[in-house]
Image 1 (cartoon, rainbow, N blue to C red):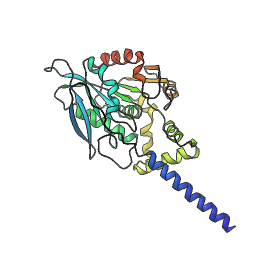
Image 2 (cartoon, rainbow, N blue to C red):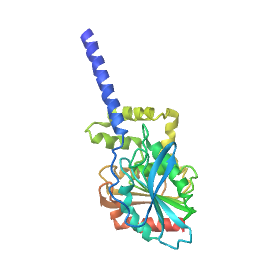
Image 3 (cartoon, one colour):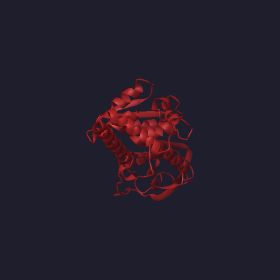
Image 4 (cartoon, helix red, strand yellow):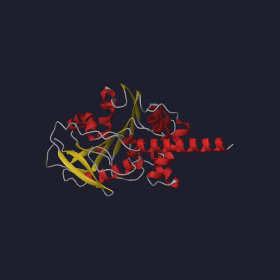
Amino acid sequence: MYIWIISTLMFLVAFAGLVWKLAVVSQTPRKTAIDTKPDIPFEQVSFQSGTEKMAGWFIPAKTNQHEKSPLIILVHGWGSNRAKMKRYVKPIFEAGYALLLFDVRSHGESEEINAPTVKTFRDDVLAAVQYAKTKKEVDPERIGILAHSFGGFGSILANKNDIGVQAIVSDSSPAQISTIMKAALNKYKLPYFPFGPLISKIMFVRAGIQSKELKEFDVLHALRERKSPVLLIHSKRDDYVPSTELDFIIENVDLPHLYVDSKGHRSSESDPQFWQHVLPFFKQHLE
């Protein structure tokens, strides 16, 4: 009897340790180097989010420098950085917009925090918008956001309040915490149950997020309460965040959306339909 009890306790301790370790690892974004720079004139910038400093690039519009220009903020996803968002820059710049690219805290060259979550992305989007409004070259009434993956998740949550943007394009965004956890656990070939719910709980505890705050991270609620127009885009061949996330959203909220047919999680912009929808959407709401 005692041997059974001891064995059970040892198993539970080992299991708890494994779950905690997985939570910490999953909540520590992989730092990737800024290995490239914009091919057009830019300014190295920094601004605060909370008590931490964030690094970024500001690219002035190529239009008349005596006129304030519209601006698009690019928001990367989990484990990425501003350099990975270069793929969106040229078409937006050529369309006459200024751009702001930045590293979310604990990513790229921005300062780190202990336990980043989607709340970090949401708050850093807010900080980026406020910083963009201080740029003398920018018309503060014509700011848009193009966000990828987890950056889209955070931008959608931020848009539940009037943050001062006129349009948001969300590319390949997850819509459910469970989907994010399934994608993360898939790397370790582990099932969602029982690991997913337990790891999610530990992540929020480490970030100091209480249970009553979790409703703030409901994408459907945020989209229903949106303050600015949103265009949702997802590739049917996304191999990380499945396009069923977009299915889930549009089954519950009537929104402009586009399915593209590019391969992978970071290639939506390679489908010609992407820019045929994104640029007119921004033009409609920012110009």
